[in-house]
Image (cartoon, rainbow, N blue to C red):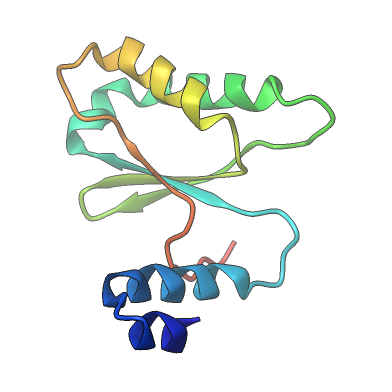
Length: 115
């Protein structure tokens, strides 16, 4: 796919192809998402955690959950199973009311996680 993108002059798509390839190479059936909370989000960490847990409960027939909370240099990473991203954005908008950027959900980052 990368070679095809380059030969077709679509070099801007190469980084997406690489990230997709990395995301496809794992040994688990259930994908993991990272929710990136920075310092500005930490005063709301309990509300964010509660919202994510509620989103998981709304998915019937799964055992999706918030898996881990990992401290980072500038905040915390929540490791989570997938959930409804549209509803997540709505709930985060309700929490932050436009005053702070929403915590990012990364679901295709080439990241190695050991859990």
